[in-house]
Length: 83
Image 1 (cartoon, rainbow, N blue to C red):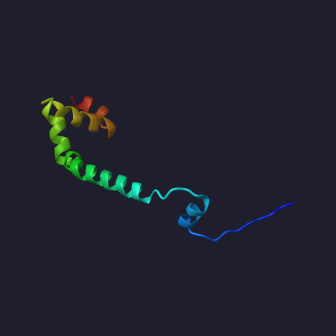
Image 2 (image 1 turned 30 degrees about the horizontal axis):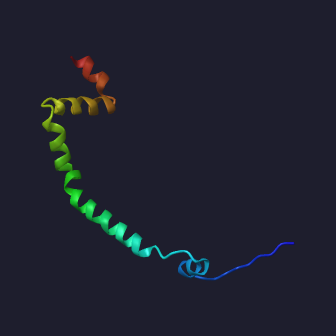
Image 3 (image 1 turned 180 degrees about the vertical axis):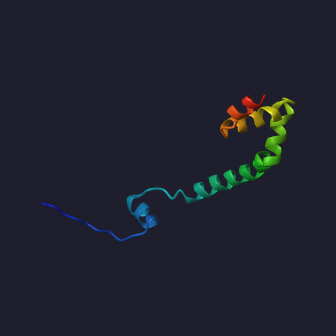
């Protein structure tokens, strides 16, 4: 025997029917907190501040980045032949 039951209701109505708690206030509070943290830290992940923090600890890091990009682009072999 096969029985199919189709219920047309909203997610809120289904939660209420099964006695599940309404977690929307908690979700709203968590999302507000996350948004505040993201906005507070957005300046730290700007390209200018990232590059500035990378270059402050090692003065030769610019040369190393250049070498890394040349190597990744496949030009590393050509640069060594020119020298």
